[in-house]
Length: 180
Image (cartoon, rainbow, N blue to C red; front, side):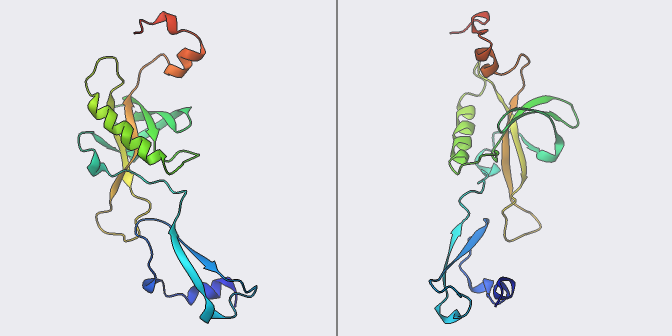
């Protein structure tokens, strides 16, 4: 039996699939022709360990939510960091995204922690302030509805001219600024 035909024989409704994620069915068989003896078929399910887990907008109601489609990417600042502008008012922001090119599952926890830190440091002088969060529909929703779950794609920060702090360190310009 070929793989495509075999897949059509599985009753996915009866499987214990995980909601809102990519679920992998892993087949265990010591028989080289593992499709030949279906009564000995064993498998298990697991969550895709490399998928981005987007924080819910409901966890951070204090931040302005801007739909990702309203932002225009201007250029890359760093791995997962971009200068963007708002489509309507042309205001500039730095967008730090959850789903980076080399996403690790712990990255989502780092984003949540950073959002919490930004909340605690709101309106503190000398600290880059959050402008909001970029949101979009959760791409891992398995049960589509008329009102899909909206999740945080990234953090929007105020944009400051002059480059990043890393660029200032790299150019050894740190003495030009009044640092404490």
